[in-house]
Image (cartoon, rainbow, N blue to C red):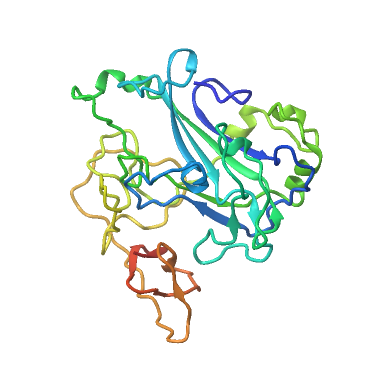
Length: 326
């Protein structure tokens, strides 16, 4: 299944930076150090979605039918699936914060009703609390599930699960860390207004070939076996939790957390001994510090933000780098 105009027709991810439709308002690029998140990884149930519920429409799944057209029947098994994420809270920034503790309150969606064409073509004004217009960041993720058609359960149940232990899809979420070099994104927003979506139309940016892009890889960060063999459980203390109640984090997680040295992950047969576990130090309590909100970070190696949670939530350790208010 293609992501049109980019790469081979074999699935993958396409990232769109979208100008506001029908508006001459100047779009401000994300500043250095900017971060944000959309979605709730703990969610396992559908929320009521009305015409004005923009947040509920930010994450969608679409099932492909014949000729890769939408199939509203969601057949079992299907041709494939497209997952889309509009990050987050749309296109409006408060102009001050680049990464608040909850990672999303500095952003908001434009006002107004959502039409039948969805958030992609939504026209609206930024609220006074978030007056700065930013690009609408839109992620399109294509999963080619056809290779698993012969392995579909005989009862027709949905067999796929997200890496955070979510078999429902409602816990899909996305994190964004701005990493564009210098003013390159601002130049693109100012000069590249072609609606065709073809990268070669944006002459303000240097365009790399697919081969050049595929040479850009990251070394292994955590030494854990994640491919080439059958996994008895998801990596990183992520048990499958089907809901409909919100998922909960595993206390005293004993997943591998030692930093790797780079290179491919070795997929030898599993050993019987348990790997060493690095337990994170407990958060330092500061009575005068602000309280973290639900799902916000509250601890971890290098964390300097709030370490206490608003009632009735408590700070739960996920790994040595991250604790969260649950």
